[in-house]
View 1 (cartoon, rainbow, N blue to C red):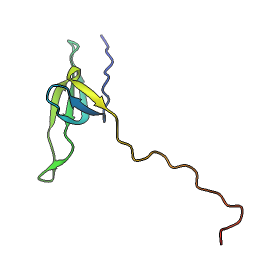
View 2 (cartoon, rainbow, N blue to C red; view 1 turned 90 degrees about the vertical axis):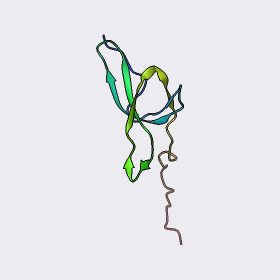
View 3 (spheres, helix red, strand yellow; view 1 turned 180 degrees about the vertical axis):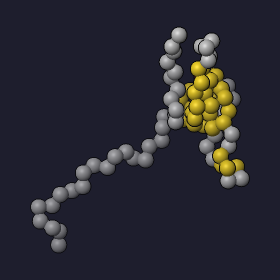
View 4 (tube, helix red, strand yellow; view 1 turned 45 degrees about the horizontal axis):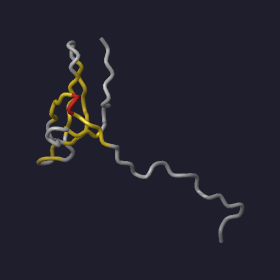
Length: 83
């Protein structure tokens, strides 16, 4: 009984019931078909990462990943060096 999860590790997710947001850091699939995702909130408390929270996958929605602008194109080429 193999099922595909829609949530991937590293995805930004939000709990549709509580509004809790974070990053999917672990996924567990149980023999009865239940899929649970461990979500860790971004940020630190007293300089340490916050504990993860296990939630049913059905409660979670994915958010688009933030990008830093993407890959940079090729730099301009000069036939002669600029003066």
